[in-house]
Image (cartoon, rainbow, N blue to C red; front, side, top):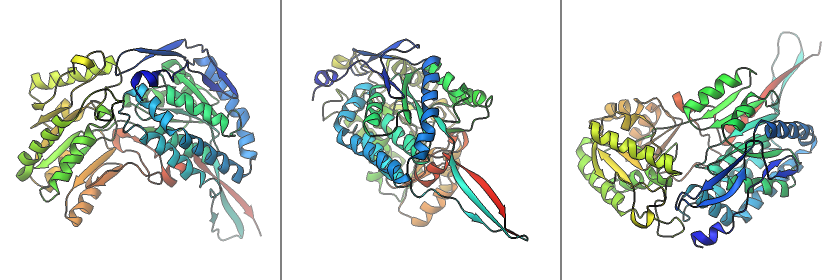
Length: 488
């Protein structure tokens, strides 16, 4: 399929509120531009406070209906939704490529992760239960009930829409909640299509509501007294505003925020494999991923060898039309992001934060109309510099030298973030030792193949709190009620 053929599949977006699809919103409309070409796409309606009110009311009305459904019926509805997403994976992959520019050869991974997560969490629906608590000295029955919060407001970013939908909404529904999703206006099409399939799946109207929207929609959702919990994935600055607003109604929040993940390569590692992961994982999705290993820490004795291999791999990365199966690197999300990333690169060059080894510019020629940034590698980077400390969210890799294990751990942990970390070593004892010492929510040793549906994912420090995925992610959408009955 070509880019032009793919764009013919798009139609003006609609928001899902209860059992209605709305073609207009009080927040106006948004014209999405193809990040690969700059061409405008059909408009989408943006939700404002009025649509948030309606969606929350629909979710609150649906909540007792969803609770009254037998657990096997709820489980089966979620499995039907997983099946519908599976049946439309190619369509979702095309929409993802159109909206955020990720290469089509890779863009089915997010929809597949959504399938995996909805399937996984459907299996929990009939297994959620409490505990019986021992009591003394008087005879009594004390037990807990694990209860959903009610209506959950979910705000997700544009870079991993379908994966986030599966991780967050799958867990929220399995726990028994209803959801109001604020779909990102920068990447709206896959989320809108998800809403359509949610209605087809047999979920009661209002259990899932999908509102494409910007800041007005998000602020109204967080402040709304009818929303019982907020789950937010995005930037730390926005999270601080959400936390302040949510405090007014005392609603709990879960945050998955930014990252500046370290990838530590020891001299005893498989250096070829380490260089492959260091290069291609850091440049995945044009570097627009919170867990990507954008700081490469290499032991002194193999530093030059690794950096030479990484630069060679980086120069081999083919930039271009994301619908071309040969393309390995697509555009960044929009013109503003492109200019910001190029500004960071230029600042690093001028202040001597590191030595530019390859890349550093904007792709021209046939790609000039799109938002393409060349894959960029800086060597000899100062770990205290903005280049190594700030989340760039672009195809920029910073390479840093270390002397020994202790310094590697210190450098890796010397950041405000703590989302993920990576270790390459053939010493099993060192792998366990370093993994335990790294301040991160996830550590990957010698490989990365994605985030399994059953694994918890989230950060420490300013990368957020709470978890997505697995039992821990499910429990994030439940709270215990204690019941005490005297028997004497």
